[in-house]
Length: 627
Image (cartoon, rainbow, N blue to C red):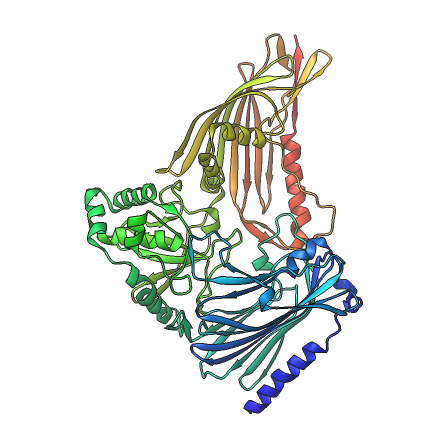
């Protein structure tokens, strides 16, 4: 039987070399919207034991234009537990004729540091075999031998403007270890599966390129995939158990967290010096803000495959760490204060990505801290010195986390943002001038996800803040601007500031009369629905904008007519605007609420219609007449 499997792999290899790489053999439907086409991609794995896996990879990509050059670059990662060999790269012209070859000696060797980590174990070989004549084809083959067996996935596509002619993944499991498989189907491509004994093969064919559209979900949501979860695995020399979430959690706690979480005398002294008092929540806040003021974020990609945090004692001494290190340092500080908390692994993404309770798997891209208290569960984002206490960004809401405990993993839901919890509150007094300009005093307050978007202001100099707000209110011809009382309230999770400005050309004259728009600070958001929608759409960020504006008019003028109030309610959100005249001042109150939601493409025109109605109301003009 083993000879039969070897024969299968040999046939696959021979078939790969017999392929026609001429551009004329690409199906026409794969050329539309594509900058490159994957002609053939195969990843053939042989799992020999818990800590021994061999992978043979072939990747053939045709670059159609200059925008596709990024897909021609060959990246081959390696590290102390991942050895690469038999590297070969071939370059073909548009007719499929071989005209250049490369080997390992032609590659550049770099630290594999895409996120600017301070310390990394990983390295990467890089080759950029770009041709000056388009189209051209790059074929890459190499072998990998690794002791790391925790991460096995198959995705046919990972970005936009890339088509796939054929791609495959095979697993020959000679280890005796049970491997769970989870298939996520999507309309983009149909999965072909074949199994014979210990050999499983998965493939996709003829997947057209995706063009990104406004409000498209994350690419991770759009593409199909096959995930694998071995019950036994090895990572950087540490063997682990993924039979279920509890087994995996015990390994995670014992192997990754406990060795780096010692309460040293120095850490104990840090906590004692704070003289904590009050409720548990108050103590946690004191420790959290102490940690924020002491540390800064630096990516550390070392330690058991980049998954083990830097020791808490080192973070304490050096004052920096990545999300893992800072979260574990905060956990250790709390432990020194007698407060239990749980290191929690999460998928941080605009689109919701959650863990499957029935499919244990080592995955995630971020770490946060969960702190149960007598009144509520406190959630701590530990990578920012600016974040408010008990505040998660909108990209961490409405999903679940892996809370690592001594006796296993608990899958816990993070809070769900309601639109009114993610609010921009504006109150403004505007004095219209008869020359078309106005002077205004306005106060702004941001909470929830809108708080997140405005945190960037606190990394700017004064002149940069001025320019950022001028850009934000680009529809106004601003003559003078003053930003005052800018504050990040880290206790309450809100940002406030006052904005005083003078603008020209706001209102227009019509004879002796003047007319002006009722929403001065922002241009109404509109979307085009003319083209046929291809993808579903998502409002990943629920929010509410609540604006109250008081208009004073020049002496010698009166309001001719007050617009009608309006109210719009849809599944996508609601909109209200009201107009009231009091003491010859017009009071405008406008509330736009956008719900979080993922919708089929067929509903996009309905959403466009809703936003057009809100934009039309925002563009309401008011006429004042000279007495």
